[in-house]
Length: 208
Image (cartoon, rainbow, N blue to C red; front, side, top):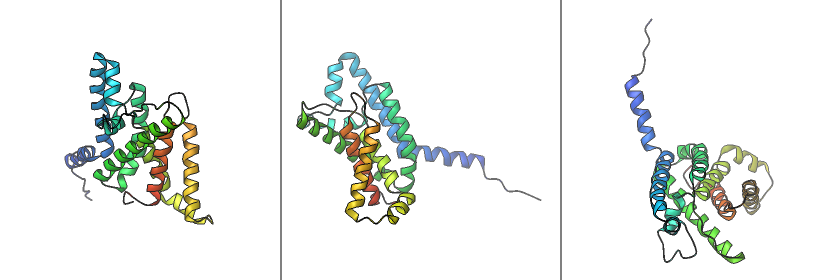
């Protein structure tokens, strides 16, 4: 009796090819590159580093911060925490979409969440500056929770209208946001990111 085995070299090439094509891992690389540049600039001036990478009310004067702030982080702990959650949810979401859609979704939700944080903080007090990928990561989490078959089955059994289901998702976003509450955390960005992700998941925006 004979057996046929796959080519180990071919399997290794396919594995390495997946690593190169993974938008989640590509995003992690961007995290590290941006943080490296931040660190170098921070050696010169911490204030300059914040001004160049953080999103604030002067976005019209520094438009690049709208995008850069999504991939910048306040420190190693901030970077690691976002990276861990990104890997956990990103690898699942990327299986149902393309790399370009993944990156566009991540950047768009991250920017919208950052703008929401700056705008709301300005309405209730002094406008804050924000940086970090948590809004975008929460968007991926919201998409994953709202766009999977289990959620479809649960919502399908509830006698709710479309608006009521949307309200339920927003309530879930609020609950998830409260679990992350702590000093210095951009709660509005977390809520906005999760809400946008959940609504996008219900609409199958990424093609799932």
